Image (cartoon, rainbow, N blue to C red; front, side, top):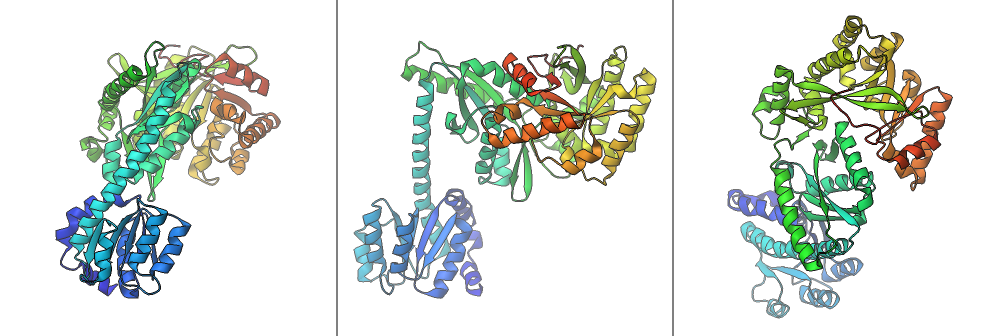
Length: 554
């Protein structure tokens, strides 16, 4: 390690710029490195491991060739003079296997006969030992940039063919999915986050019935999804329902949880257009939609960390938090109501209450402010405004209503007192109030929040567990909380039709609710078929856009 540090001494400032550029093109490249000198091999192997995705080393050409026969590498770096098999023979044998192999030679002998022979192989570069770090980095950047371009061209060609195939089907519609603030995320956390983000996005899309083989990654931050035209309304409603429940996607990376949001567009294919015109019109249309989405001031992302409100107000990436603070001041946070129906009478049983921020004649969805507001410590203020309005609005009705409760709200005794005050003031009985608990599975049985929930339950409030079956089922908490309702998304039911594991989970849940006198609510009902399927399975209640969209009016 001392030798390695000495190798870098005095050149840090000189190579820092090219080093940063180099990292941008080496992250997905594999290297096979052959060198017979143990100390030199260890030194450079340590350097290469800081740059490349995968590095394997060999003490001579013979061992290196055996490794290459097991798998191909993007880049071969080799010494010339080695026992058993020298570098020239190694390169010759590798080129027989892969004529396009990229190769760099590192040698201490500039007059070596082997060096002159190696030029005939048209290797990508030759470095003389001892190697200056700036020269090493510059050559690696030149070679790896070519490899990276070749890889991307190959991937783009495959994606282009896939896109052309999707465009040939006149019965399909194309959804455009854009990762909000992707450039800012990439700049802050590095380009290596891209793979993790798009894995999460594709998994998210699978819950809406969009399979991976029907998706194309058009650009760094854009995915195209093909679906049957007949299912457009269903998917749009499901996506809207997803937004209404202020859900975000969580990407785990380097011990951080990056919370991202998505924006969507829809493109209809014209049956009478030629394939050539269709591709041209499609790309023109796609770019205009992407620009429109990226210019949306409410697109945002955030990272799970402590947030200082004053700093957040100054931050461009969290600028919409300032909108929320202004809405609190102006009292422009309003409730929306969505009906929940009895599956057997088909009459309205209750209403779920959602939050919106009113801006002129438009409304900001919860996904843009609820989760971050919780982390900023202002969710209680938002909840108090919405609760007061919905208690007042629903005081003249005898129907129950669901209010969304985050776990953090239960840690504050003031919210308990406030609910009791509202009930007394507006003469709303406790048993009409259903507390919809998000992320219940993260609660600890002995926590302050669980004790608060049980106190409210003992005082007559009803308990509903929200997002049920989308995460691990905590049997211990179920037995402690004894919920009155569980809410199961229709996507779980839809997936259970083809996924035996999900079918087993759903069957267990419905059997459990029946035996435990818990009422089941099917959430996200977007068409009559889903409603009928829910009836057959024995759900007690249902809600969704097919039944009624959230509205500021009852």
